[in-house]
Length: 432
Image (tube, one colour):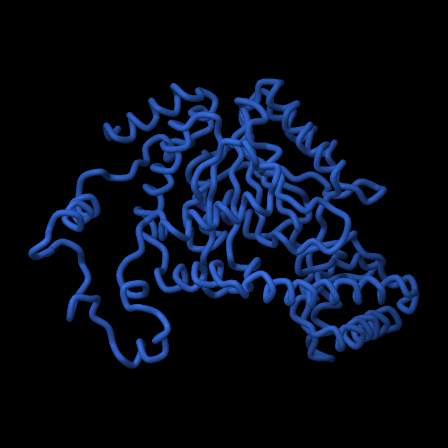
């Protein structure tokens, strides 16, 4: 094992032996090189006042070389904030501003010990880093039966984790914290579990209420007290899009400092929150009571980034940072929030109007981009293909009877027509 990796492992063990036990084999072996091209370039950047012939970019006229056909479209930004490589951890100011934003939007983080967010190539990359650092073959990865299908690829296919699902909802349409608890306690003989909490949930658009949040945290704490090391990932992709009386904070704040056997990891980003999907700017943040553990986990995260993408795109980080610092940011973001809330409320009013009879029911939704219909005895895949082929309407079939509809991408004035068509398509099949 590389001495740098061994030292990071020692730092984690000294701070919290349980966190060390959570690491995968790759997580134990990975490190960020302190000697080599990056470190020598960084040293030269400080001391090479005459000529700096270290880093692999081209320069011209005391700045990064660039093409005018590109720069003329980006003239609001200095070439130095666009063309050079961004640091592997991301632009330092962006990391600090995002941390401030996290604290402002999650008051439960006040007084808690958590690290500086590391920039990722959006949220999937952050989840992949978690999988690499903590998932070995056969490790239990626990998340609800209503989920984003990429979890299977990220934790199951790539890392050979053992996927454990539990029903998302109870019969009275609350989050199934008992199901989570049972799935966790079933891992006692293994001593380790990775839990993924995705709120607002994709595909249902559900965020638990305050009491449900407490029940989730209590289930995780009970597992920790039973001797299970738990990596808890809050996948906060749609954070902030809370339209009703639900949790309006990430559970990351309540999980931070909960128990020595609980390692909270927050995955979030500008992707959906700031409506910049193609910018691919996300963040990964760890919580721990021990600064040495936080520092070591950051270094291991940088090792994963260096070994995979090297660093994230610089221009989009600059764009996001500039937006976050703008005095118009909050007002413009709230305007888009109100549009999204109006669409969600319109959908709920339509579904509760009774005009669609008993063709379907729907899973609870109060946030995010989506809602999910539960079809009564009608194949979701049959309806999906029928709607696509006969009406030119696209939806997503999930499982046997669930049909996901993204109200996020339909103007409010067209939502009634959309659901009327879905209903018409269902009637076609039922009456055939």
